[in-house]
Amino acid sequence: PTKHEFSVDMTCEACANTVTHILNKLGGVQFDIDLPNKKVCITSEHSVDTLLETLGKTGKAVSYLGPK
Image (cartoon, rainbow, N blue to C red; front, side, top):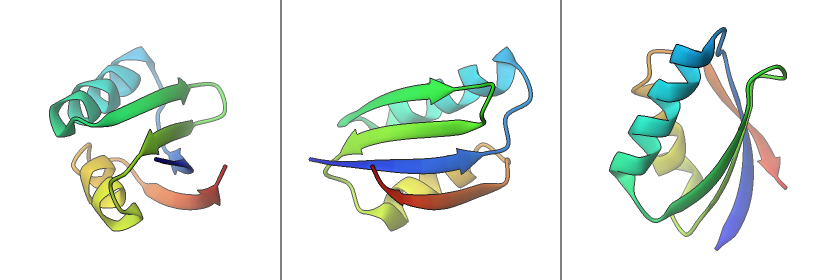
């Protein structure tokens, strides 16, 4: 599995919970959410495109920061 870092425009605990829910639904991921810095680190064998698409389902602005 590869570790990737994403920027997700989360403003509150509810946003972080949405990200948690959507990633758990995808499955095959381990992740850490850094709410103050609006970052999500994901360790997964899914492609970056899949992870971006999944995070995009939150309705938040998402960008890929690169491998961690």
